Each structure stands twice: as C-alpha cells, then as structure tokens.
Length: 332
Ligand code: MRU
Image 1 (tube, helix red, strand yellow):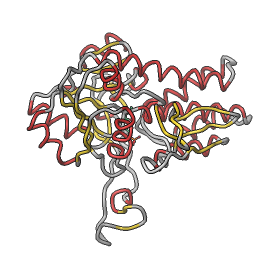
Image 2 (cartoon, protein in one colour):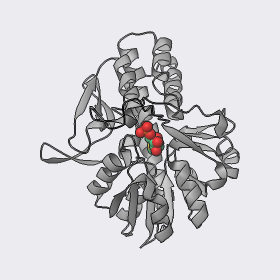
Image 3 (tube, protein in one colour):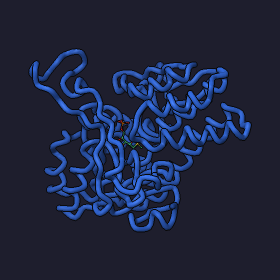
Image 4 (spheres, helix red, strand yellow):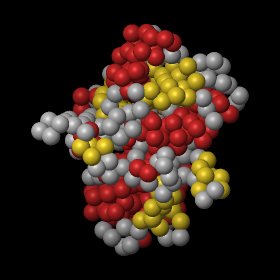
C-alpha cells in the first residue's frame, strides 16, 4: 500500500520481517501518524494481535505466522508458542490456519523466515486474485458500500473487500464508496477511509446508523470482508455487518463477501458454532481516556456478528466468485 513516511512516498505492508525483527504498522495510531513497531518475542506478537496493533483476519494470520517464526528463531517450544498465539483472539479463522500452516512447515524443516514470508506473500497473491474477480462486479458510476476495514492493512497488502475497488479504479472505472465508521474501534473511518484516500478513490465516511438511509437513496453493491465462513456459508464479520445484509436484502442490493480460502472453516458447520469475541466494555464507554457513558451504565461489546448465508449473493475468493451453495463443492 502507498503511505507517506518522513515526507517520502513508500510502498509498505501491514506486517513484515526485517533485520531479525517482525515489523508492523501500529493501526491504532492511524490516520494521525504512521508508527512502525518492532517485535522480537512471540508473546509480544500475540499481545499485538490481542490489543489490535494489527488486525483484520488475513493480517492477523500473517502476524501469527511471523510470531511462530520468531518463536522458532528464539528456540522456544513450538507447540507452546502455537497455543499462546492461537489464544490471542478467537474469531478469525486465519489465525488458526496460519499457526497450523507454520507448524506443518517447521515440521518439514523449512526455514522459519522463509516459511512466514511465503505465508504473507501467499495472502497478497490471493488478494490480487480476489481483486481481479471482484473488480468485474464494479461498473462505472456505481455506488458501493463497505464496513469495517478489509483493505491492505487488514490483509498484509491489497485487501479483500477493497481489492476489487483498487483493481476497478486502476482499470479506469469511476465509482463512489460509502465507508461506515464502524463503532467502537472506527476501522471504517480511520483505516478504510485512509486507504481510499491514499488511492484517490471517491468516498465518504458515514455513521453506522446511516447505512439504511443511503441504501434507500441508491447503493448498487456492498462488499465486506469476513473473519470466519462456516461450511454452509454463514459468516462472521465486524459487528454491524448483519444489519447491512438485512437492509440490503430489503432494497434488493447484492451483498458480496470477499475472503481468501483460509477464512473458510469447514469444521464449523453453521454460523451458530462460530465463537464471537467479546471485547472490553471500555471500548464502548470511553473515548481515549475519557468516559463518555454514565458512570454505573454497563456496556456490551461483541466484536463480530453472524450473517446467514441466504443474505449473501456470492463469496469473492482467489478461486473465483462462489454462491453459498457452491462453496463446499469447490473448496470443501
Ligand atoms: O476486529 P478487527 O478489526 O480485526 O475486525 C476486522 C474485520 O471484521 C474485517 O472485516 C475482517 O477481518 C476481514 S479483513 C480482510
């Protein structure tokens, strides 16, 4: 992704390995500034996933792969490291997929850095393929909507939901994107809008509660990412996705989910079996260090919701666009 660092335009990834350290953009600091953090301990890397220094399913996966790499380089017990890293967050399938991939690669004797780099690069390649297939859905003059951040920051580079937009824009198509702010962590406002800005893609940030209003005025296509897709096509994504899918159905707007195959979990039969992360209530009640809710009022903070497969027009994957009924035939 493009980013300006110290006045210079750079091409940068969400997470990478350099000079013996794992480096990542601290996504909590955007859009105000680009802060790059260095890690040399797998437990600190697990904590960076938990506290959302890095976030978004494929980026969580790649960060976990680098965490496993660091544990191996430091001569740590690999099985113990795998357990610690898997405990960082419960919902994104990519976290578990990446750790298991690394366990298998290390067991084969692969070099830890080469294995983790190959994992991260494979995500970027898959996102490019998602961009190619999904870009065909976008036509000149369309109004699009997305939720949370499923861009380069969330996927090492390129993005899932944002990949078709990047590709279509690069192909000369002109369209408009509504990015919903995504309370409480504001990934839509602070990350998606930042990425769309870098690319020069026309967009506006909208409050989460304004999605139905703008759909009623005319939205042609919705694309979101996913954290885990069950075998029947139900999927978990950032809280507020389910509302959008229901409203999209009401207005007849096609709702697509862009995700690599690593996000599909065939051991989870339906969405009811997906573990939904509950995060701290202070993410809801506090802004920076100031409490904005009445003292004594508790808050609830589920990080994800589950959208039923029947609301999904298709899954945009690196193997093409699949209807929910086709996923187990093509990739099961
Ligand atoms: O809590 P987050 O920021 O990790 O949640 C991210 C999302 O919900 C994304 O939409 C999802 O991981 C897909 S990322 C390509």
